[in-house]
Length: 355
Image (cartoon, one colour):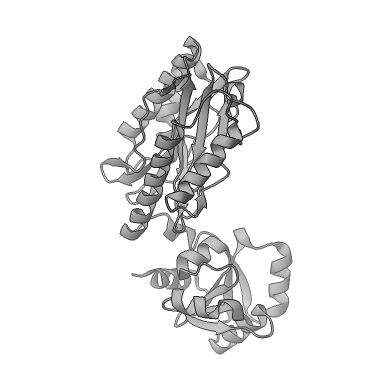
C-alpha cells in the first residue's frame, strides 16, 4: 500500500470520514510538499491539498496523488466546502499539533464533527522505506565527513561557537540544507551538560570536547556525537571515555528487533551503573530518527514500544561528572530482524588532538 492507502485504512478502522494534516513534518511526509503554507485533507475517495496562490504551482509539482485547491477566502472555509462536498460527517485533526485556539476556530468553521487523533501519520513514519533509508544514509555520510573535517580545525583557543559554525558550514558545503538541530559543543567542565549548546568558551589543553550534531538533508536527519580530547585527558576522564565506549559497543552488539526500548536502554545503563557511575547517566539511551531528530521509539527506562525491523534509532550512552566534564558517543542505526546496521561510521577510538 502507498501512504494514502495506509491512512485510509486507519480512517476506516477509526470510523472517521476525513483526516486534516497541517503540521509541517507530517504534511511533508504525506504530500511531499516542502513549502510553509497549506493543509492536506484525506477522505475515503479523495485527497486534497489546499494552499494559497504563492504555492499552487509548487504543490502541483510535488503533491502527487493530491488535487491541489487554491483558497481565496481563507483556508478553513475552503476545507469546509470540501468536507461538505465529500459528505464527511467527521474529520480527524492532529491533537498533538493543534492549539486550543485553532481547535476553537475549527469548531466555528467546520460543519463536520471534530475528532482528535494521535499517531496516525507518526505510526507510518516509524518504518523507513528503501528511499528514505538512502536519504538518511546520505545525511549520515555528511555528518561523518564533518567529523573527519572538524578534528583538523580544533585547537586550543578556538571557541565552542566557532566549532559549531564550522560544522554547520561544512555540512551545508556537502549538500545539507542545515544542521538537524542546534549543534552542541561542550568542552571541559561544560561537558557535564548533556545539551550544552555551543558557547563563547575557548577550548583549553586537556579539555574533553563533546560534539553532538547532524545533517538535515532532503527532509531527513542524522544525529551523531563524538567526544575528543585536546592533548592528554586526565586519567579519570580517560576511564569515563572507555566506560561509555564499552557501553555503546555492548548496545550495538545486542540491540535487535523484538526488544523493547526499556530492554535496549538497560544494556548500556546496567554496564555504566556497574562501573560505579549510577546517577551520572541521566538521559535515555536513544530515540527514533527520521524527518524529525526526535521521534518514536524511545530507548529509555520508559520506552515500552517494541523495536521492529525498519526503524532507525540513535544509540548514545553518556556519563556526566559535574565540575569535571562528560562523554557521550552516539551512532544512528537501522533495526534489522537479527540485529542492526550502523548508518554513522566515524571512528570511536579516543581522538587526541595534538596541541
